[in-house]
Amino acid sequence: MKTLMMLCFYVMGATLLTSDGLNTDEPAMVLEGVWELENQQMYENGMLSEMLPNENGYRQVKMYSKGKVMWTRNDPSDSNEWFGYGTYKVTDGFLVERLEYASGPMMNIVDTTQIFRFELVMGVNSYQQIQLDEDGNRTEGESYIRIE
Image (tube, rainbow, N blue to C red; front, side, top):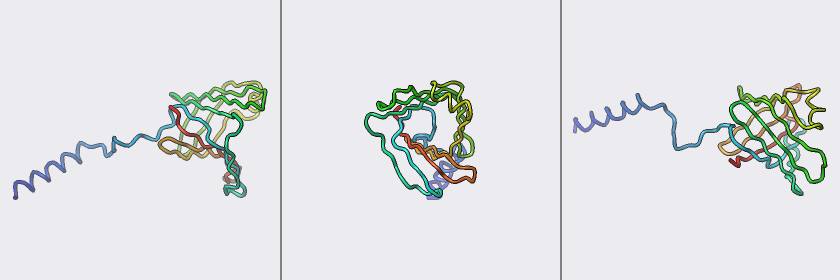
């Protein structure tokens, strides 16, 4: 019995020493991949006030790969083209996107705001990016689901 207990302790100890502590059966929560907009949220006084689903063929897709981001939007009710390309970084729960170029309508925004900073709420197959005002209150957000 004493030998069996010693063997069990040895196996447990060896497992703890060689393990990285990560459960490899669980998918990692990473932003790299292809994401589709599921809905948008509006906040009042930092609290969720309205959730807006995509309607009438509206689609927005974002792709993140090796520090680069590209997004495109199709809104059948809007004749403008909407897309952008740039870099991204995730740091301390925030997503920071810096657009390098974009479609004409987006360039009007990029001319005044090239860096977009969002609070990032990450799930395994979903994420939410939330804009904050100068006081740190939530103003609007977008929820995405992983499509690849």
